Length: 562
Image (cartoon, rainbow, N blue to C red):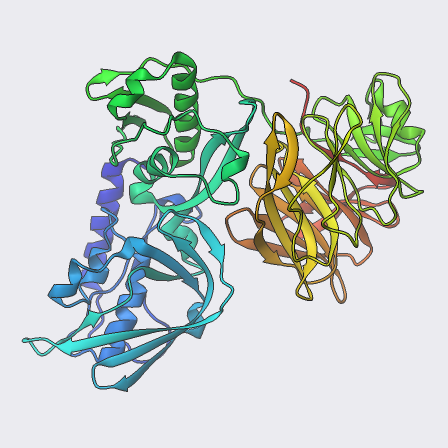
C-alpha cells in the first residue's frame, strides 16, 4: 500500500467512525477500540487502528481507560495524536509516547478511582519494548500506573500526570508495532546477523536507520558482531521513502572519508535492514553528494528442504523415500553408531555424539573420526560454520568447551553462570549466538548469549538473555531460522514445542509425548520432530503430521555449501 493510499484509508475509516460514534462512553462490556483499517484483513502490515475520542461527561476512570486504549492508534504521523486528546494541554507536549511500550493482557485491565481526580491502572504485563525498540519479556507481571486528572474549564476531566510510554494489549501489539531486523555482520564479514527490533510502521525507515547507524547493537550481542559504519559516522534522523520504495539516507560528513570496502558494507547493512520495511533500494549521501557503493556478497544461512537423517543405516537427505547420501561424510557417520549429528554448512564436517556418550568430529576427507570429549554426561554437541565443535556436560553448564579444527580444546569463559544444569544447546548458523535450555532458580528456561571471539577463536559468552520459561525439562534446541529458536520439552501429558523469536514473543504447540528430537528446516517444513518409534513429523498449521518412518536419527543442518 502506498503512503497516499494508507492516508486515504485512515481518512475513510475516520469518516466511518464519526458516523457511527456511540452516544455515550461505554461503562461495561468489551471496550470499543474504534475502527481498524486494512486492505487485506490477514496482512498486519496494512492495519491501522483509530481509537475513540474522549466522550463528553466521561468520568476520570473512563478518561484513563480511553487514554490507554488509544495506545493502539499512533496515527499516520506516529505521534499518538488521539491519545493526547485525553491529556490536559500542559501535558500534551511533555508526554513522551516513544519512551517505552508495555505489552499486556487486555482482559486483566482494572481502573480504580482511589480519590477524586486519581485513578490507578492495574494490569498484567507480558513484555516491554524500550525506546530503542528492544523487546524483553516481563519478569514482574502485575503492575500499577497512577494517573492524576483535573477538571478543565469546560467541565471535562483530563489527565495532568501520566507515565511516559504506551500500553498495548498483546493481541493488537503486532498490528501496531512490527518486527524488523537491524543487520550487522559477523566478525568475518561473511554473514549478516539480525538484531530484532520493534517499531511502529509510520516511522519504520527512520527508526531502523537510527538504530543501525546512530546506536549500538543490543548489549548481549554487541561484542559478537561487526558493523561497516565507523564510530564517527551518523545518520540524519529522517529517512524519506519514495513512492517507488527507495530510501534516501543522509550521512554525516565523516562518511566521505570511508573507503570503498566500508561504504559497500554500510550499503549492504542498510539495504538488508530496510528490506523488512518494504524498501527495495537505498541511496546514501552526504548532503547533496551521493556516495558510490555496491552491496557485498554474503553467505546465506538457508538449509535444504529435505530432512537430514540416519535411516535404514544410511545417512543423508531424505527425499522421496530414498536417502541421498553426502559424499565422503555419510560413510563416516554411518560407521559411528550415532545418537545425535549436526553437520557443518559445507557438509565436510559433523559433530557427533555416540551411543557411548563421547563426542567426536567426523570429516569427509576420509580420515577416521576424531575423539574430542569423553567427559561423562555430555549433551548433544553443536558445530559452528568455522568447524568448531561445542560440547558441555549436562550437570556442569559452566564447563563449556570449544574444540577447534586443529583439535585444540578451549574453555569458554562465562558459560551459563547461575545455571545448575544444561539440557540442550545449539549455535546459530552464522556462529554468533549460542542458545540453550538450562535449569536456573528451579525453572527450565531458554537462554541465548553472544559468542565472543578473539582472532576467530571463541573465548567467552556474553551475559545471557532469558527468552522464555520452558514448561518442562528441555530435550532439544534448534535454530529454525536466523531469528527463531525451536525448543522441544517434556510436558505433563505431551511434548511441548516452543518457537521463540530472539527479541520477540513465544508461540507453542503440543506434540506426541514420545517425541525425542527436533530440527529446524525451511519453507513449510520449518520444524521437524522425531518420535521414539522413528516416525518423522512436520508441522501443518497448528498440528503435527507424520511424514516418514524408520528414522533412527534426526540430524541438524547448519547451512548449505556455497
